[in-house]
Image (tube, rainbow, N blue to C red):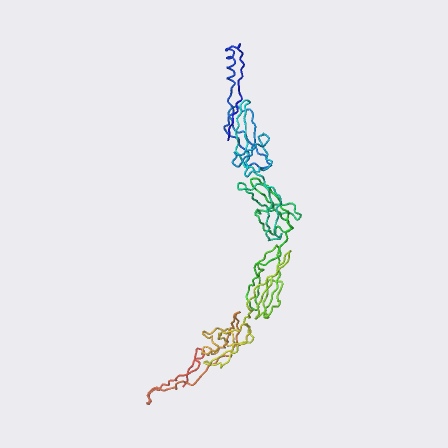
Length: 464
């Protein structure tokens, strides 16, 4: 800052030789009383803006002064970046100034000198200096790159700009995306869409899009792009295959989900099921479920899901299931053979069965009443053969054969046998007599050992 005090007070007296010393004294007193303190700055002037923008007005206050200044004059300057060197006078001498152009020098600054006067004395004080900046000016408008289709990404190109861009005042850009009607009018800002890129959403379909790019270098200037073409819907695009659920067994029902899809809502779906072997043929359709039949046994199943929306359609096909299996199905009941007498052994056939893969078998023999009803499992009788016991006499016998494969299991029971009868066989040991063979003595018969039925219903007893 520089301070300049200019004094123009002079006392001019023409004293003729005839004027007395006493008359000079008469005037000296009032003149001494009229002398006042010259203006003196105590707080420098301060500019109202942080930068001076070409084409924009900048102003100053007067600062604070002692003395009794009655008037102020102003001289604006453009200086080097230090605010002191190579200063050139500019402006029209008022308390405000509008820079008309950017000074040729790099990093020019603007300040003002305020001069206070009380009508006699003068004092001057410089303000602070601020950078002189040319505001951004759009030369070539912003543009938008990218396909205007739902789900695609648009990118804003800032365009070409004039204006100050240096280390102190770099030029950067902000973005505001807007959704407009199909004619490019009635535009509204899109929530949170303030990045250089914008991904189109289903809400943009049928609209046009534009972006406002605002350049900043201490000053701000916006410029709009042209609007895009009308945003188109995106056709369905599969992002995850359909998945079949259910058991691949004849008689069971399979179902499918739709898979996952990108594309503009609303997406609807249709279905086509296929039975596959050496080749695939169409089977069920138009439903997301399929009931397996005997014709599917030994084949795999797949489904094609077709997604549809206003923009088009697309297919996605599931993986194939395992080969369809069939739970064993009886085509002929088991048959019991053997003699129906206590101690004899019965055997059974497996019966006749359909099923894929071929089944294996387990067995359970049962003891029923004489009419073949009210059957109960016989403990530990789980082989294809069964040896009759005294407990079976008077009863009928049934066997249940269970067929098993990977698809499941099912049962079939034989017809009931006839009633099991008592069985006798020669004694393993002959009867014997004990006692003394003397007149008057008692002899006792021992029955010996016998095979044959002996139970509560049919106890074995002897006669002699």
